[in-house]
Image (cartoon, rainbow, N blue to C red; front, side, top):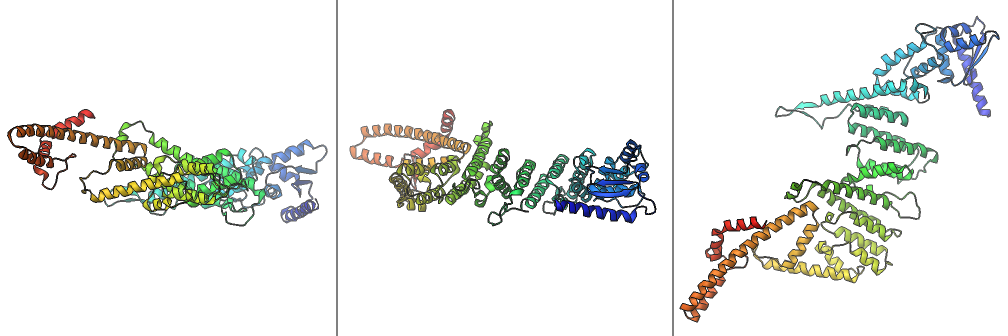
Length: 611
């Protein structure tokens, strides 16, 4: 209390000293004005000639000869009232961007309008605001800063809205001009935009970072309505967030040792929630690392559920460009729980999977006829599957990580997301090593996630000797390794393109391939295989007809020749035939090949009818 009184006394003393410099010294003052602790010994006549409020106060107390007036809640305080008083006394001073907002508000408070005097303070301040400030972006920003302490009066007088509209219009115009400057003609004579040229239309980003968050939100909203580019909006949001969230805390530097100031958490929570609400809907408008930084801050500051879910959805839609460091979100809330926030990552993966499914769910059946090996979403799936496997390997050593959470992360992606299971096997092996007390039933449940036929040769050799795996899993590994070896041996003895492979190994490789494909690619592959099988079936029918003809010829030979001649003829004719139509080096003269050429049209008709 003593400090407050001392401050008021010093303020009153300084105001009296300033008044002595410009007030009439030869005329005794007849009214004392008190404003926010400051005292001004003035004269009634200059004041009542300009201020309608003071004129009314003096008129109301004419009989009692009022000599002391206290002006409560005067906008701008004693310093602004001093400028208004100087104006009443006819003393010149400069109106600038640093005092025009206060002058507009104080002139409204004191009713210094044209009704009481021509060219009064209100009209002078309004003219400066319209003709000077609203044509300059930096001045508008400075006026908005001054308006922070003048609300809600500055809003009622539309000072804030006029400055915001001016900023948005100026930024949009600058951006359009910058875009025109980057237009150039290509070698073919076509006009195009030079993407590599530096964009100079976003210089306002740094200027806006000094505005208070509530006014900044209104500026960004106005810019969106004006059509400012999403990339520019995103760059401004990144710049503002980094300045506001790194002032008093270590939110953006998890490795730092600075303690978080609890008094600033409310402000930071508002900043995070506001920035999230302002994020452009377009993908890649802000870096995904920035989104993860916002998510860490939102979790740490206990922001609203809607805020966190919005961030998780945005991250999930572009998870294929994330890195492992992005996914490693520390667990801030529960000290005795896991080291990393596994639940948040699982929700992000669910968002990614649902988004992928929605893209694949198309009504146009012609999409499934595509012969492309992978769709764009399939490529994203492959990247995310590798990212998830690396994430599982990173969190697996955590002793507090429950089996259910580990499996939930692994099972979030669809089965066709992983073409090879080496990364998943490595993560599961690390988990088994860190949780050696895991029951056999849980081990079996965990190892069911691995498709052992999708392991590479090196991973399969390691798994075959891994004592941490259940016996059932080791048997599966050995079985598929044996099939792989048998298939390799068959291929080494087979003709390059003619020899058919073992049917059982073909089924395994075919199932592995189909599991590695997305549903629509898998459907197209099955259609192709079906057509090939039907074609082969037609060929076998033609060859069966050849065999029947040969059988009729052999019966005639049996009736005409001896048994030795018959056997010789039978051996030659059987040697010229092959079950799948693949002849030897001199097979061009075989009856089956000739009949295949002559009846190719019959085969095509057969395939068409079976389709």
